[in-house]
Image (tube, rainbow, N blue to C red; front, side, top):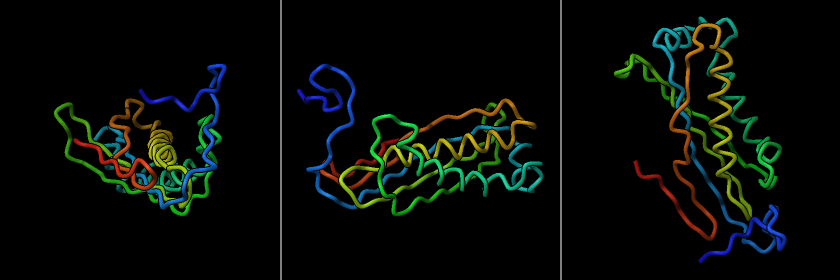
Length: 164
């Protein structure tokens, strides 16, 4: 059975020692889906949201979120991110419940001894929260789903790709 390294000898949480881990290129992609009314998505696409360009602000917020990850997640190591990218896929066609969606995909990269999964997940989530914040005046019923790690590469554990 694998030993958990996130606990000290007293059984309390600790930050894992990564000083002996090899530095490799680390890449992680995560996503979050924002579910919203079709009219709300149309307003976003037409630039009719009073707070401004929703996706531009969400993109910057996602990058900022990735950079702040160790300030939000207690045992997350501060790392030097070499890139963060946020992409949006808009689905105007309503689902069976009459809702449209925006899928936020965030990719984070570094060269170092620990991965960037948490940075990618935080970036996707903060971008989704920003969409909610900017549109809540017209659609308080927005929700989030499918927040997940899509893939990761680098490090001793190698490559992971989510199976749909």
